[in-house]
Image (cartoon, rainbow, N blue to C red; front, side, top):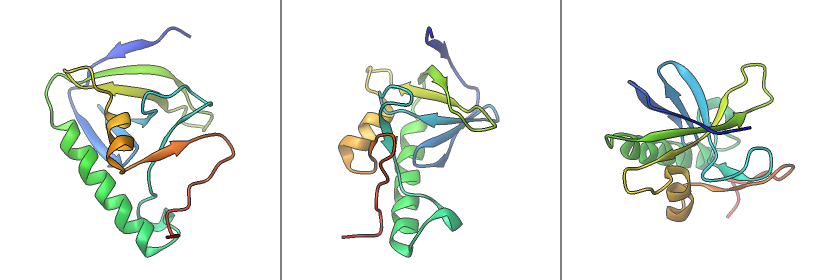
Length: 124
C-alpha cells in the first residue's frame, strides 16, 4: 500500500495512542509498520485493568493533546486496522520531522507494541 498524506481541520486526542481527525478515529503507529510493530499506551476509563493504568492513560492523553496543539502537523496513513471500523493506522509528523508517537515512546508515555504481546501497565 502506498501511504497517503493528509491534514485535519480538527485533530484531538481520544487517548494516548488514538486521535480523532475531523470526526474519524485513527490509531498512532509511532513510526511503526502496520501489524508488525507500533506503540501502545495505557487504556483509559473502564478499559483500564487497574487504577494505575487509568492514571497513566490520562497522563499519556494529556501529553498527546499538548503535541497535537502544534500547527502544521502532517498525517501519513499507513494502512487500516482489522476492526469493523477499519481505523486508519497513522504516523503524525511535526514540522521539524519528528513523529509524535515515537516521541511519546521516547518520553516514556508509550511502550512498543508487537502482535501477541500485551503491555502490563498495572505491574511495577
